[in-house]
Image (spheres, rainbow, N blue to C red):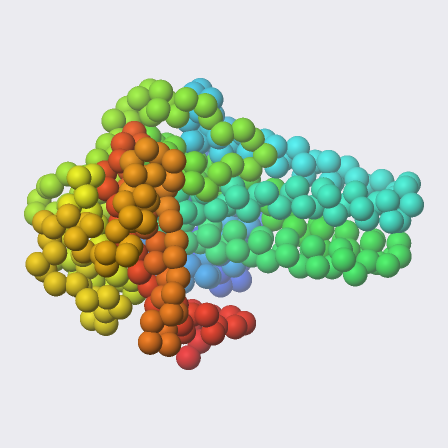
Length: 404
């Protein structure tokens, strides 16, 4: 009997998924699903996965059965994908990338069905080129994870995002192994083994992720996010880039079309400085600046010192008495002309930075002057950043985040 209410459908699906994880076969699960649930929206599926995680099911466990879940929901979700009419909407751009990825997957699948007709080395050369181009899917995944997921998190869509991110990483690992195995192919037998054991699983997983995005992720995002979210998401996407497709033109016009009166100027609100990229109270902001492993000094467009950070270990002596002084009065006489020359180049727009390095008491000190400009390129002042690089210059190899 098909469940009638939304809550009844959710409870029925959750029970089927629990039993699936306990050993119920995918085919039996699908039969029960069609009998007890019937149609369901992508948002409901996302809510169910979120609910299971909140009830204690590990995201890793859901990831492990992710493909089976997709099979389970496939018939109920047919036609659920929502194409966006605006060709520059972030979801439309994701979908265009998926169309291109699907085309490439189809080409690979057609190739694997045919006997290798060209010489082996020619085939391998072509495969290396095609596999490298296929690797652009990672840009698509990165934009999804680093740009779209954070906005979904704001609306409580956290668990399903974690599940999908883990699945993305599994696909990245399959791609890496596929590339590594391709390098070691020496004969036709190796090639056939590579196709069966490395390429085919990768193509299958990539295709499965397209289904999950188009039928669950994107419709849910369209339901939850607001116009201002999409506007900022479009702006953020420029930092990551796009896979295979050209970025949209006239971004500012598109932001307006999306309702994106997204301010790039900071404002004071609720006892915080609200930046386009976040908000901080003044005490936290001060301590952040003082914690940075660099010394910062800022002089405004009139050449007046307005600020310096107060780090615990200083390279250069700075007293609070320099605030309000002209910058030329804060440097040794022999360097005044050089400082003035740099500032003039900043003001005119000829330069944006100037770097120096020197030895002080056996320490290697790196100093950079930066021109600070607003979004319209107007000169606001000069920032001096000094850092002791002595210890950093000795680093070799790598140290992972969690290494002791």
